[in-house]
Image (cartoon, rainbow, N blue to C red; front, side, top):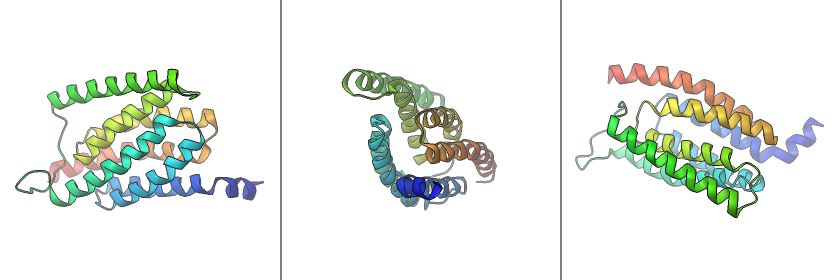
Length: 194
């Protein structure tokens, strides 16, 4: 039975393993997290499409795009002088803007999923997607508090994926949740020493 299950779910298992590698690279602030993230996201486009999690599938496409930008920003910096991107704390104004973006994304995705698709979980899918989009942008800009948002998003994702039977993905997001606490601690140490 386990062999049969594995043969039916090997793509999801591969994506979960790649995702765990991603989080370790993220904690270490390694630029290699971005190519691994692109691979992981490409796998999950397929997984989420098959499960009719359309917002999460769209999120994976966004991850691929933001991963390209994150890779460039981490390698070359973001300013005209190409200063190396440093870990920073979230500024109040940026936090307000990101909160508004989250609310707008959530509302737009929820209404689209509820009224225009056959998604079985539009609110969950929209919440996870909107939160993940904001957290990934924060990661690409090396904002420390992205870890706090990931803690909330990962808890919601574990609940959803268990509910719909995506067990390897639920395990992946549980690992993400645990590692988010470790990442927060490690990035706090790095922000002090940089």
